[in-house]
Each structure stands twice: as C-alpha cells, then as structure tokens.
Length: 483
Image 1 (tube, rainbow, N blue to C red):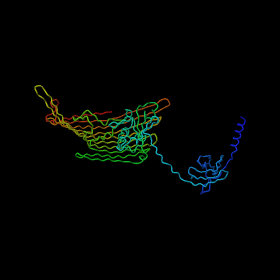
Image 2: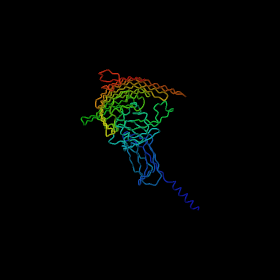
Image 3: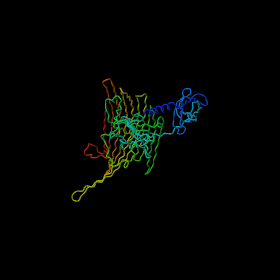
Image 4: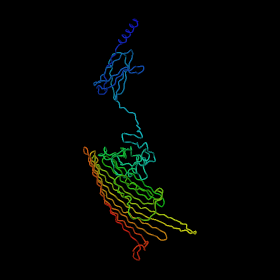
C-alpha cells in the first residue's frame, strides 16, 4: 500500500516538472510596420490541428503564449477579422516569432431569409404578401381574398372574422376615408410588402383605454421601391359588339407626410366601376341612392350577376390627397365625380285563363335610359393625440340624375323624371381627456334639397283629375328639403 502511494506521488511530480515553452513576438502591418491590435495567435498540433493554446495581441501588436507539452514541432498561426491568415511551423522551444501581416477584404456568404407567411405581435397580425401571390394576381384585392380570416365581398367591402373593418390605412394613414375600393382595386400586389391586421382597433387614441372595439383595421405596408415615387398604370381594352371599350388610368404617390391617389375609369362593357367610390364607413350621406318620392316605371334587375345584364356608359374620376403638417395632424381632400348612363329593356307576356275556355293575354314592353351625374368634395382636418382628438369634415355634394322611360302596351306611355339633389354638411367631434374625466362634443349639421319632377305623356285616367280639354301630359313636382 505504501509502495503504490509513493509511485503516485512520483508520477505527479514528473508531470508537474514538464518543460514550459514560451513563445512571444509581434504581429505588425507589412506596409506601415506598426503593430496590429486584437490579432488571434494560436498554437496547434502539427498532426491533427487541435488547438493547444491561444492569445490576442495587445495595443502594440505584441503577444505571449505558453505551451506545456512534449510535441517536437508546433504550428503557430496569426489571424484576424480582416487580417490574412498565415502559419509558421516552429520547434518546441522558447523563442521569438514575428509576423508581418497583410489585410484582406472578406466576402460574406449570401444568406437568404424567408419570412413566415403569417406573424403575430400582440394585436397585430402581419401577412407576407409575396407568399400568397401568384401570376394571376394583379391588384392587392386579389391577394386579400386569399388571406385567412379576411373576406372581400363583391361590393369591395372587407370583413375580418365576418365583421366589417373600421379603418383602412396605407402606411398608417387613412387617405381614402372609407372609399378603400380605390386602393384595393388599383394598388398592384407587387408593390405591397405586408398586409397588417390591427385587431380590436380603436382609431381614436384618446378612447383606447375607455371604449373597446370589436372591429379590426387593415394597413398596407408598401415596399421601399413604392415609397416616395410617383407611380402610374393604365389598362385599355376593346371588343365587340358593336364596340366595347374599357380604360383606366391611375397615378399614386406615397410618402411619410403626403399621399395621393388619382384615378379615371370608363367603360361600356358592363363593369360597375362606380363601386370604387362606395363609402364603407363613417360620414356616408347616402348620395349613391338619391332616393325620392317619384320614380319611373322601368324594368327590374334580374336575379343574376350584374355583368350579365348591365348596359352602361360609365366614367368616374377621383382625386384623393392627404397632407400631414405635423405628426398628429392630417388634412384630407377627396373629390369624386361619376357620369353614368344605363339602358334597360324588358318584355313580359301574361295569360289569364277564364271560364268557358276564355283567356286574357297581356303583353307589355318596358324600356328606360337613366343618366347619373354625381359629384362630391370632402375637406377634413383631423388631430389624433392620446389626450386630445379633433375631427372636422365639410362636404359639398351635387346630383344631376334623370331618367327616360317608355311603357308600351296598346299605347306608348312616355315618362320623364328629373331628380337633382344638392347638399352641404359638416361633422365635428372634439374629445379632451382630463385626469379623471373625458369631455366629448359632437355636432352634425346638414342641409339638402331634392326638387324632383315627373312628366307622363299622354294623360292617364283624365276622368279622375280636373284637367282641361286638350291636355297632352301630366306633371308632378316634389320639393323635399332636408336638414
């Protein structure tokens, strides 16, 4: 037992007394002859390249490295981030080894990062547009229809989780004030980087901790190539019979403080381009319907796609501009004009079978032509802060609609309807947050007039009315002011 313990002590002593090799030197620039700091110097095994020791040069380019081992030869290597690697084979003894280094540029390998299809951070869901796009997709609306959770109706209205969205942003700005069909049907998919969904979106910052919203908002994040440049696109088509035509021109500009979309569309091929001007949220004066108390007897719409029966001659123009004078304020100007002519015709034949093998047959032909001219100008000032919210929107609108119709049975009944509409309105909202209370003031003021008149020729049921002999037509006037 004592012998074994003594042998162990001897072995430990022998190992501890191995020779120590000290290698030192300088790594300097071969051109300027100055020492290079933070160069990595290593000692490696000549046979298997394993690292036996390492150090870094100091501010003057000097290094010291120690080695305890029995190898006859060692490989000394100096290398750095932009220093060309060089090695020297030396014997295992204390000595001075200097390096004269040269610099070299490093070519990094290309790394391609593929973003995930869908990312979520808090209440924001981001869809990578390129991962949902194929060759058949031209506009961003084509891509929106493919995104999970998002539904686009035929009218262009966007729903998220079956609930209509309450805001549509482009780079965080509400340029179109609800007429976002102008964006979804004109912005090309290739110009959009991401589609973001803001769940439970409260657009008014002053109410975010006070009023919960179940509606979402959508924001388009554009590619850098589409920002700060004026882009335009045009589409033209023609066909038969006898001459069908379709054309559109769109110009767009998006930056941090200015945005603009100006577009013209026209066709007689059954496309209802007026849908681009449809208002999907807030401050809708129902100018599209222009309903009144008078109407022309005209053919009703069949239960099929509008593209199958619409005979039209439509032109629309839209100018939309946004300017941010400061971080929390923006001024919107939206101008829209619609000129539309729609032709309708129908034929109906009805037979009534009576007793004694008798029957009555009634045939009626209806045709009509309507002319719609509508324009509106919106000017809005919006300030949106955490403790203060201001919104004022002024609108001017005018409608010059008319319709001509014929009802043909044994005789021809001609109808002429003029139904203009003129209006002005202003919407104001102010919200101010104090320490424990919130002040909210709203005001909506509007005035419109609908001086409609209907002329029917010839006089029908003259015995029921007090008319003079020789009267050829009937005329009805309705004046309907609204405020």
